[in-house]
Length: 625
Image (cartoon, rainbow, N blue to C red; front, top):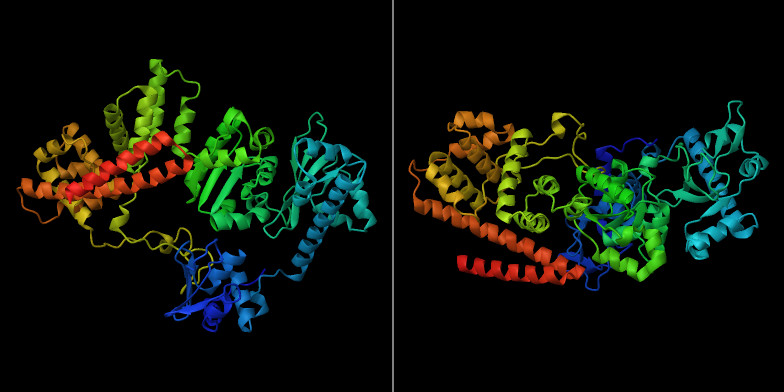
């Protein structure tokens, strides 16, 4: 393995490099003012928005938002690792970089890896030759044609076939005098107790699994004629060149489109990915028969901003989609969306039945949020005219909505629950507040983002001045530093201070159905204070023991505000006005985003409703000003 490149070496490479020279190899740059401009290489555009600063040695695209130093440019453009980018830049400027820092393996490991890759390449060539050019491959070729795969598509994915003949592949490699131990460890064969090898994939249509560079490193074989006690699909075992946690089917072909669109579709099976590809949806991938791993998510996160899950539309597929979304929500920062194909079809069936254009249209117009998907999923099998089913649905639906912070999203989903259950919006909102209070007292809460700076570890590959943070070490944890409060935060804290000093303030707020705090921690303190008083308690000392640890410092800060002992109605009204105006601006921003999405999806009724909502909020904002 290559040694870690020291920070001082990285700095030397960067200091001896002019980013303009490197970027100029890929982008035609023209001087304009202090910077150079050109057409962005990361997305399609006609007007140059890609800027390079020779003074600062950075690039930035004002359109797509990408930016960084020379290493980041090459990592983004060529989709290579940070060490590989450093080596590439060093070679470009003629920097003498020690061989120990180059990302190559030692001779013994490199020889083994090279040997295995050669075996898999030759095996794939054998499989494709049998499928396309022999009589023995005709049944498999007929099967693939029946599934709607053209010869061009078969060639693109290098699909092949290994007949159910006595150790055909073993004989093939033995004739090439490949050593027994190499064959034994390759994963292409099954070894008996006596040490004899047999073909692992006999009688199977072979789908090659390729790494990001397009090299075959494993196979998945689909049985052509179902036999008892045989799995439908059989995957290669893990080897020195194949780790299923790090590989995604079709990533090598999809990565460029994923990078351009910043969007990736996750399908359930290989045939779904191939069917989508045939319909023009190039940026689709599938995991190796399991949920996405952290390594696979990290790989996708380098190229995409949005992950759209599209599994089979039948009951098992819906269940699998629900599990996948639950896992993804906890483990990725990618924006998640869901598409459920009509009539319980899977993508492969849908493309064959309705055609490529209808499939693409459904993917574009059928996108819904994970929350909308889960609320719809919860209704399945329930009779909402039945009191018990109605209560079960509402309780589960509110639990889904409870973590949401956006007031506009909460309103949209509560209205949906109201329409489904028949329970009034006001009742649902009160029940949701009770649930949020309960959740807040049962689990620690993160502090308000506006209150603290976050000093997080750098992204992988980012040059740093000192050693990288160690997981679990204090250096890698969140550090908090007080910041100056915004105007609305001042107002929120003053209202809470008045609230805790004067119960009349609480009554005024409760009588104002439209009131809510802008920032979640303040809203939670408000709801917790009301629940605290409802239990017959009143002292601040008791309240500190009632709330989560993460809110206690904030409550102390609020209590320590230097305000008049007697709160004036004028001061309260001023604070409420500031909060209301900010809420209106936030609601207006979110309504415009939702309107844009509704227009994109062709949802006419939602487009009309949101247009009216935008008009109402704009008018309300003007009245406030």
